[in-house]
Image 1 (spheres, rainbow, N blue to C red):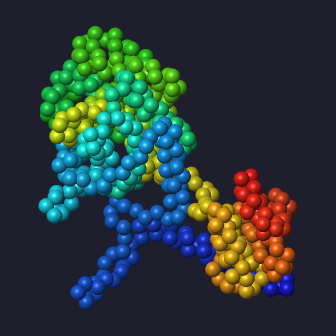
Image 2: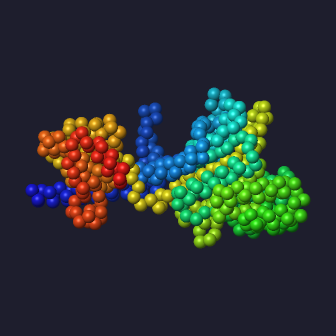
Image 3: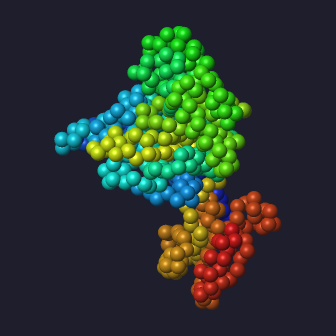
Amino acid sequence: MQKGLEKEETEGEKGNYEIKMENKAVVLKMEKGLEEVAEARDGGRKHQFVLKTPKGTRDYNPLQMAVREKVFNTITGCFKRHGAETIDTPVFELKETLTGKYGEDAKLIYDLKDQGGEMLSLRYDLTVPFARYLAMYNITNIKRYQIGKVYRRDNPGLGRYREFYQCDFDIAGKYDNMVPDAECLKIIYEILSELELGDFCIKVNDRRILEGMFDLCGVPKDKFCTICSSVDKMDKLSWSDVKNEIMEKGVSEEVADQIGKYVKMKGGIDLVELLLRDTEMCKSDQIRAGLTDLKELFNYLQIFQVTDKVLCDLSLARGLDYYTGVIYEAVLIQAGTAVAQEKTASTGSVAGGGRYDNLVGKISSKDRQVPCVGVSIGMERIFSIMEAKANSVRTTEVQVMVVSAQKNLLEERLRLTAELWTAGIKAQTEYKRNPKYLNQVQYCVRSGIPLAAILGEQELTDGVVKLCTVVTNEEAEAHGSKSNLIKEAYVSRSDLIKEIRRRTSEA
């Protein structure tokens, strides 16, 4: 008997090893984009093609999806905590709805072929479709969140894809100044803190300050958006590179140097108050209005206790055309420096947003303005960090595995599993008629299933189930046990569900 058990253990270990190696091979294929050749038939003729995901897209294995779901739950939990309700919109819109909203990034929009007389494009973000939704249904007040895929014809890179998720929170409606804006920053603070991504900084600025600064520096109004796009690259490029790009766009070196003097300024509420005392800057009504709003914003942020992570950065531009007031962007911090490079340890911006008071009016045929402010969480960059940190994430939520210690008990295992499902217990059992006992136990260990409900001929006769807690090899050793099953107890069938709920609530 002992010899047979040793043989079963050896086979079980071999099976575990093969499963682990198979899973590892799948992950390597997904990570490295390993291409395979497949065959297809076209008009009766065979032809070969490369079997791979399109450029800038990826598949997600169960472990990666478990990490992703955890992040989604954290983000949606925060949105709901702040009283938001959710909507959904199509992944494609009329092309004219998206046209003229994204500045230089408009070239990244995916256009679709003519479909029944309609020119369509895949959505670039969730903000413009939301504005279309408000205009179309005459909605003037809503606090909404939305999670969905967006598409950009960008150059793929580490942490940058052409298809990716955005998680948006927006407040539409007329409210007291800067209160909704402060809540959006509070939401960024809560989400990044709860996800434990590391130290971070939320940079804030105001588009009116940028417009006023550029006007003081002598930038032509028709070059405002394109110069904004250049300045917005200061977290990725040196000032000399940004300056050269500005000059290439037809701005003189003297004007570029003036821009550099302002956009290098960073600080907290002290900087805002200092600039408000700058008589030269405050000659501009736009700058004065923007600084006044930032001062009020910092007042609310102090009440929300988030000012330790907020920095006024006059280089922050947010290249999208629809922003009209306060703008912000959250970046991760590495060794005391704002992270900007696209690397695993340096993932750049993870959230951004701002105020866009005129966007609904531009879309609405009635030109009705609905003030809006919102924030978008960059899912893929956050996910790449969480995935790297994930050690032991379960890919299922099964609470109990129904195990048989003897042969020919498939029907009894299925009957007990069905009882557990009916009671709302997450359960499963092996599909084989006579699975090996050790393999069933090892599956529980590998999958992180916390409980095993064991059936045998004697248990069926006595009307009981042997309920055990499943532990890892290390945990078993700590308990002084040679088995992965501890806390064994014979529980009557009538009390089983109650006992399972008690044990899982204590876990």
